[in-house]
Image 1 (tube, rainbow, N blue to C red):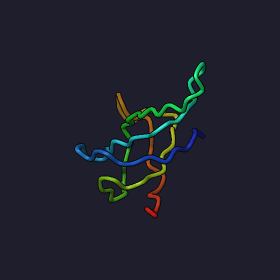
Image 2 (image 1 turned 135 degrees about the horizontal axis):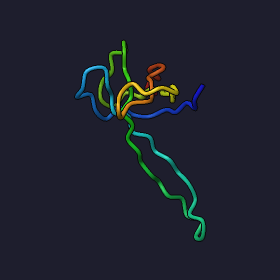
Image 3 (image 1 turned 90 degrees about the vertical axis):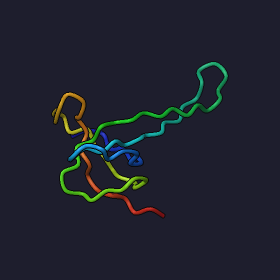
Image 4 (image 1 turned 120 degrees about the horizontal axis):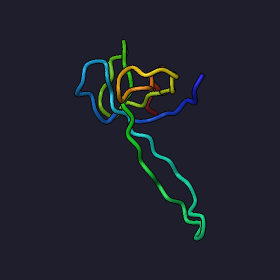
Length: 80
């Protein structure tokens, strides 16, 4: 239903919630220099055993799990 993203787990302080950091790269409109931007998302984590620095695939589920969570962990991506 929603777009899928791959990000890195940076926080696991709450139960059933992980904080995932996504890094976006885009060009500056005038100078055409690549700019890196980071954004943290609160993600619903029902049954995956995650650790800090794991790569996960997340998607926007279309429903809110709480006030700040609307993303869901789909699967854990193997670190290479």
